[in-house]
Length: 268
Image (tube, rainbow, N blue to C red; front, side, top):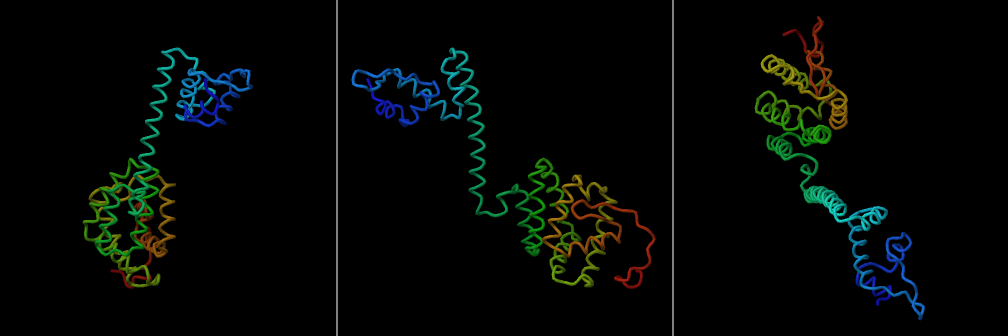
């Protein structure tokens, strides 16, 4: 016969836990012997180990009581259900471990490998790190909100960056970050990118240029861009004058008859 301390030691729990299980009605509390001690038999050890195993698996104590009284078929079904849940939790925790392990890698913590490769490609081209940050901060919420869209969109972006006008756009924009709103560099940049967008839309379709991103998400990504690179607002205004609106979700707009732009000199 075992004392409560010995029972706790054999079952791998604390005395306090045993008393808690007594209070919950999970483990019968034996009567005191002639010396005033409660003595437990081997069956109590087995029962206590069952309780501990179920509790450690995350089974609520109310359900533990139910399972202890279940027949063989009910217990087998419950164990299969618990095992399924635990395997799902293990997979989730493994994913968390992998993400934490990539913490030192920077961009890869929150982004798919294809996006990280694209960002590294921009750096290799010599694009200013502030522009790379704009790109990165845009992909993070997109990857979290619509991960199924990322493969298509990043493949399109990787194809487009091979086009000289777009790669020049990134490089010129890098130089324009520290310029004034009226700097000729901005005007030249917008003229080139507007012509490129128009050509691309005519050849591939406007969906290829803008991408099917929902308006609320596009607005969020635009805000991130403007906060990181304020000159982007001026570029949007200039693009608007040239028939395009938006930043994350570019759309062609009807071009009204306008007088010659004061920022561009004489009509070309």
